[in-house]
Image (cartoon, rainbow, N blue to C red; front, top):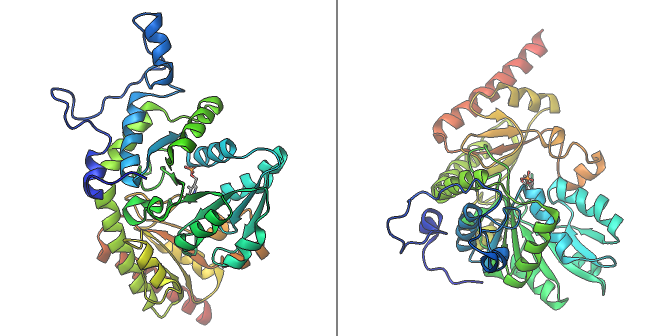
Length: 400
Ligand SMILES: *Cc1c(COP(=O)(O)O)cnc(C)c1O
């Protein structure tokens, strides 16, 4: 853990740059090169462990973005990957070996579930999945070979919150490494390292990039672990491309203002939905009716831009609703400036059995919203007209 010199808004804009440097470019240049020239053999040997040797090992543009992320998370160091899944798989593989055991929440990202349950067993690593908030179940899952506690908070798509103090205390008791996927929260709303979490992962594709125009993975945390993971990243080759890193850096500069607006917009939309007669249930951590509201406001600075809801009516009505929206684009992914909507039943949770979906609270009519930075009144009006379109369609079906 590193102390913060500045507040998050400043870190987002200025992080990773050398503020004392004069006469250099203000914008970080794109080092679009695979290799670096050395003056002589001694210099070549020296630079082999730096970011000016070979771009699979490291690259100066990537390093600046990594520095900005480390500052935002309050981490010793950060690493970037070709995708969020690249960060997850590389980090886990760097930290476990055959015979080791992992404890993970049941309702983590689908790709991570697939990696832990279908790929790692081939390498002799088993995972036990537990209920996000049943700490008794976490404790019962522990084995002498358990090495890693893998968390995600808030969860997708029902926005459950994991008590980070409790999770870290349990991990310390069993001498485990803790890792959290904090994609939905961003470091603007949640800094897991302050709670003692060892490694924080993000799909940088989402809020860090923020414009739905790049794919990347983010990892930040304890230096000794990061060094092991860096070595693994170089071997597996899942490094981020310099041009994409430059786009990411551009995104990070506005991370704080985007997320603050997304927090405001999402809370307003959550309130609108929870007061709407056509809605059965709204999931948003900063809504007073959320079952973990008190934990959420203690642990997070904002509720984030993600919410989900169940509408009254059938799964077909939910389909009709998302198809009637004009300002919410029907598309997977999240965290960008444009508002998006998905039906988890047909997207992120399509490959999971119906029984598992039920257990996770993912009904056929659940609608997930990634709130963008548009005007909240426009977004609410759009939801209003979509509800009206569905009910008039229902009415016509009745009379027709
Ligand atoms: C998107 C996502 C991932 C995977 O990230 P990619 O960049 O798509 O590989 C992992 N975790 C969460 C919570 C995500 O939303």
